[in-house]
Length: 91
Image (cartoon, rainbow, N blue to C red):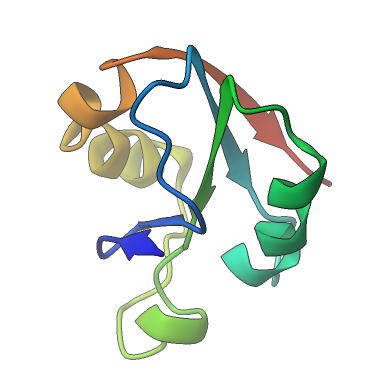
């Protein structure tokens, strides 16, 4: 499993054509998506967003404005856009 402070990849797929970037519901963590990997084809790489204030980032201040989330994502724009990507947001 590969991870950074805000992204967790249960299985890195260097040859994947698409990155599925999943955002958990309010109060959830990246862990809710880890089992999805076994259902995805080899062409899709699962990337789970770990929000600050939850799970492995529990000591960080939670985001309370969408602008803060956008700022954090923009810091990782090179990683996000390295492959075609789709954002999945759960509610």
